[in-house]
Each structure stands twice: as C-alpha cells, then as structure tokens.
Length: 414
Ligand SMILES: Cc1cc2nc3c(=O)[nH]c(=O)nc-3n(C[C@H](O)[C@H](O)[C@H](O)COP(=O)(O)OP(=O)(O)OC[C@H]3O[C@@H](n4cnc5c(N)ncnc54)[C@H](O)[C@@H]3O)c2cc1C
Image 1 (spheres, rainbow, N blue to C red):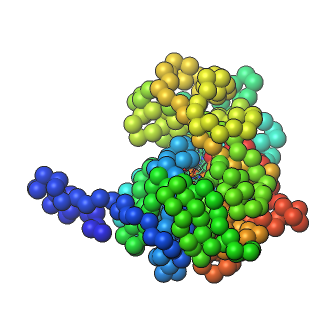
Image 2 (cartoon, rainbow, N blue to C red):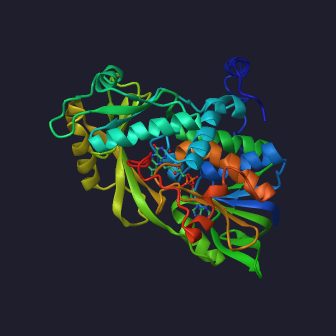
Image 3 (cartoon, helix red, strand yellow):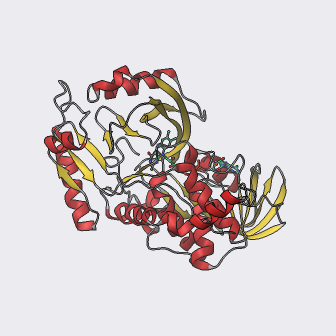
C-alpha cells in the first residue's frame, strides 16, 4: 500500500493523478480462513483491523452482503462522546474516543475527527440531577466532562434560546473533547488498512447459513458458495437476530429503524454538537454547512432503511422551541438505518453458545463513537478468548441480571 502524504499529492498532481492505486482490493474468496467476520460496517472492519494489528491474525475474510460501510456506519450522524454513567461503559467508550484522537495517523487516512465539543442539555430538574451525577461519575472514571450553567451554554451556542417557555435550558453536560468524524472515511480507512494487511473484503457476499459440527462452528454458506473458518465474528448490527438464528441461538434485542435528516447548507452558525434529550432531538453542523438533525427510533420493530414523513415533523417540532432559527430552514434529505437495541441500552460483546462464534451487537442508536474501542476489544476476545473491556458486556449478564443500565446516557442515544 502506498502511503498518502503531501509528497504523494504533489507527485500525483504532476502526473495528472494517474498513479493512485485502489484503496482496497476486491479479491475472490478463498475456501477457508482462520477468522471470518460477517459485516463490513465500522465495527466489523475495526475488529478485523485490530486482529491483524494487535495479534498478527491476517488470514481473515470480511463478508458484506451490500457494500462496505453501507449499513448504519454510513447512515449515522457521527456523534462521538464517552460521557456514560456506568464504569464498564465509560471505560469502553473512553478507550474508543481516545483511539479516535489518533485514528487518522494510525490508518494514514483522514477521518476528519473534529473534537468540537458535545453538550447534552438539561431541560428539566430531573436532567440537572442526572447530568450532575454523570459529571461526578465521569470525574471518578477519568473521563473529562463538566456540568455547565445556562449562560455558559448560551456562550457556546449563540443560536440557542435558553428561555424556552416549556423547556428552558437549565444547564448542560459538556464534554470538550467529544465531537464528530467522517463516517464513510472511518469505514474506508479501516478497509484500506485491512486490505493492506492481506485480509480479503468480499462485498456482495451475503451469509445465508452458519455451518456447525456439533457445538463447533466450521464455516458459513453464502450466495457465493461455502467458506470454512475456525472462528466466526458476527458484526451485523440490526441483522444480528437473523445471524444468531442461523447459528441456532437467540439474542435479547430488538431491531428498529432510526432516522436522521439534514437541512440545506447555511453559513457556519454552530460549532459544537448539541443534544436535547427531553424534547428528543439533537443537532450539529456539517463541514458543508448542513444542519445534521437526529431524533428517536420508530416506536415499532422494522427493517426499512428509509425515512418517514412523521419523523421529520416530530423531530423538527421538538427542536424548534430551543432553536427557533431552524423553523426557517428547508430540509434537504432524510434516511434511516436499522439499529439493534438491548433492554439495558448497552452493547453485547461476547462469546456465544456456539464454540468459535463471537457476537458484537446491541450498539443500538449509539455505536459509531464506539467503533475503534469495540474493534480493539473484540479482536482481543476473538484472539485470546477474553478481554477486560468486554467482560461485563457478555451475554451472561442477561442470564444473571447484571445489567449495565445506560438508559440515561443513551436518552437520545447518539
Ligand atoms: C440515523 C442514525 C443515526 C445514528 N447516529 C449516531 C451517532 O450520532 N453517534 C453514534 O455513536 N452512533 C450513531 N448511530 C448508531 C451507529 O450508526 C451504529 O451503532 C453503528 O454504525 C453500527 O456499526 P456496525 O458496524 O455494527 O453496523 P453496520 O454499519 O450496520 O454494519 C453491519 C453490516 O452487516 C452487513 N450484513 C448484515 N447481514 C449480513 C449478512 N447476512 N451477510 C453479510 N453481511 C451482512 C450489513 O449489510 C452492514 O453493512 C446512528 C445510527 C443511525 C441509523
């Protein structure tokens, strides 16, 4: 793989850009791999990347039924933060946030990480108490956040109306090193690095069955034929229930659609990310000037990766009291992704009842921020059979009732 650099840009400019090579190969699949990862979203690709980088395991195939990064990874609103309440979550999400800080250098790929700061608005007394508690918990966990006053919120976000008649802003939980990154670039950067290590990314390859010998996985069937493997990682977000069913076990999660929309581009007016959990909406401004707006999930299970009109209305209506200026914006486009939600709003990173099968799912509405941390930990689990970061997130927690309740941190959930 040729490195990207200022020198390479100058060289290619001089020879009319004829020397760029493809970012990743499109190989034919082999009949067997040491590890197969199903799902070339951010989590699947990051898992493969750290298998190679940390453990030298490169005999890996990543199978993707569509195109890489075309699932939730390419559909999300890219908020990155680690201000979770419970210790295991704070450890995992903070590891992930810290990996984002150096991701562009690590991958030699500009993922446009922008630590512009994230505020979660407190608009009820209940939220004030909740976020003050989180700020104290974060201090003990080594996560840098603080509770700020309404005037400080106004200073950071001049377009906000802090005196709304129903939901005035009473303060906010501020994480200065939270922010955003370019979602496609995260998938593309990992894909390029995986391909450079010799891993095979097979797109348009849908897993249709999981083959077992007794309690042991031996391979998968796909629309392009059978492929054997010693270990199998399932990293398919909203399709996790289907994959688990193929392997012969059930998962405690639901699949629902989550939608987002963007406005027409406007001049720079907001350089932080703002989440408003009580009214249920959040907003940031993209580099192109569009206001990126997200809301909650659909209230019923579904598998449609589309937007719906009632959602635009609900989400924009929720935000208008706090951001009156958006009432004058035209909305440009809207979309949806299928997210996998657990009862305690925490992910599952776990071995499964089938030997050699590992599952990474349950990130629900907030897994983009976790991509590098999850990949880092999942690779360790697959390579060594255990990882300190995944221990509390195993399937066993549903059996013994040791939930990691993040329903407050994941209120709007991004
Ligand atoms: C509208 C929206 C907004 C969001 N906003 C945020 C946010 O601001 N911040 C945040 O942290 N998170 C956010 N999220 C959540 C985040 O996008 C996801 O948690 C994360 O992208 C999940 O990544 P993944 O790699 O697990 O899944 P995906 O990116 O969905 O990848 C899974 C892949 O598996 C493939 N697949 C499925 N079945 C099969 C099969 N049988 N064979 C082969 N391949 C298969 C799919 O095609 C897909 O490409 C948002 C999600 C949505 C939908």
